[in-house]
Image: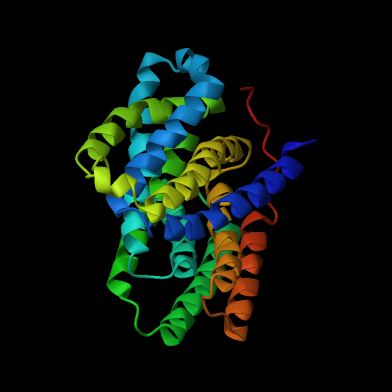
Length: 299
């Protein structure tokens, strides 16, 4: 299968995985604090990746570790805590929607910091997708006026972190094997995550006796294995066989999946949500239309 077809398969799979992450965060917060959730998520993901790919660490050259560390902080460590705090005040579907700002930030950071050019189609597609996202946000505010949208700023900061990470992986880690990047990222984060967890109050006796705490751990285990560990592998591969803007366009499809789970969990959905979702999909199509196929490098 050529890279043109593969990238669409990766995009769809990643959309389903990450689109389901927001409802898992919401469920995890029932028995965990945002700090506990973020730290446990990273630790569980690290264990999973070490089990399946610890040997890949030796594939990371010394001069690449600084970029692996930068990717770890911007692409995972900081965002997992920001999203956890954000979802204490806003719906999981709204968090998924706001994350669709990533491609816009990806173009800006790519051009300003990494000197990556962008096409007219990419810019038009990003703007169209962004308009769809704005419609979803304003509709969400109308349907849920009691939510504190100040916490939406945390999601926007997380989106900026994701955009920075996408450019780092594409510009600085293109020649590093995908598994090496993915495992290296969690090798960087596991010690800080353990330190954070030790000071989070998670080891108090009463907490472990709470049924909600044990249930939340199950949700975070699923989130860590699929939404963080496996998704990180898929995302890094997607960047390498396409480009940073196309890879981050996954965040335009994620809200549709997030809204679906939100509906099942009792969150509200209207025809305007449906229209905005269609606009987002149009933006994703335009971002990719007319691009030349890229030959992936061997990993």
